[in-house]
Length: 116
Length: 110
Image: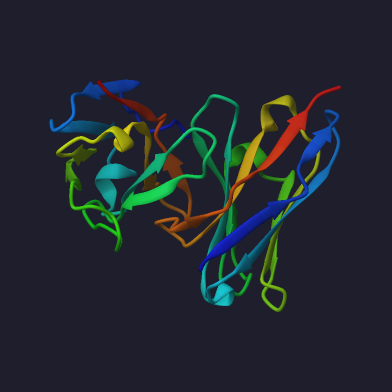
């Protein structure tokens, strides 16, 4: 069974940093592109970033370029999202998702609250 | 990067069919056969329902079908059931390895 489990969410002040992690199991993690997708409270989904199977290519939505960094460790079947210079508008549930398109499996999400 | 356009809500009675539209541009929806649809129940993670415009993953009921005409993709649910009540999102490839979601459509089964 495919499982994606996010961790690392929490409350952070504007301008602060947070690192999200996603532990993957039940599939060949190293053979899949992986993405982070977020959902602000009561809002729609927004693709944030993705990373190629071997980590050689990374892509970001314009609003997080230069602030967020996606990375992966195929030996540990894990995906990370380092978020710096956080803004109020970054507050959301962050999901990790497998696949390039479609996103065929999703985790349950990690809540990020940005507030002073 | 604007979101794809979906109706905020649709509704139908059990047994009926409904269609949810997803409108983009020739740079996303109309430019690639890469629209997917996701179902999201409250407080839950999204679930893939349709991919590559028309394909259904294994385990998804054939009551769910996808189509596309020019810059508008559509999700049709036939034989509506109470458990279909949910929010549905479309997603399209938007070029340069980026992706765009629609704003979501709340389906109410009357």
